[in-house]
Image 1 (tube, rainbow, N blue to C red):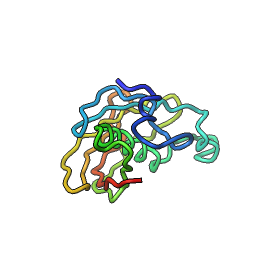
Image 2 (cartoon, rainbow, N blue to C red):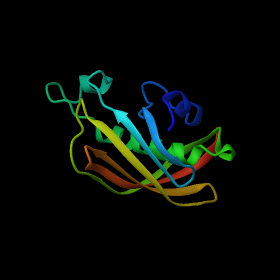
Image 3 (spheres, rainbow, N blue to C red):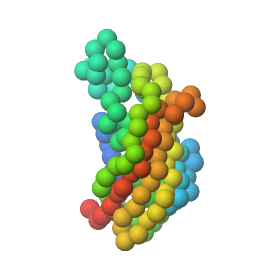
Length: 142
């Protein structure tokens, strides 16, 4: 398990873009499971949508990518690198995410070669699938 402080030692994201609160499971370069506690205090709920708060899909995808980033950047040889989105395929949203939900994200590494890689990532609320997709990324030096 990684705390928020340990997560910040692995990925460069900070408030308001750090969207992972804890890593529950980690097999570097293979798999990571993380959580995001969604609260009404999030800035984006002010405008998305007033009177009917829904977490923006793009931020759900970003949270999922950050969990994958922890899996990829945790090994010593990748510390200090950045993981950039290179593409997304087969992305689907299944259910809205609202304040009070806990988003549990599972990122599984499909392949990595020459600094490029592919992840299959899913997110759940109460064991119900809310989003999924295949993410392509590139590892690069800062």
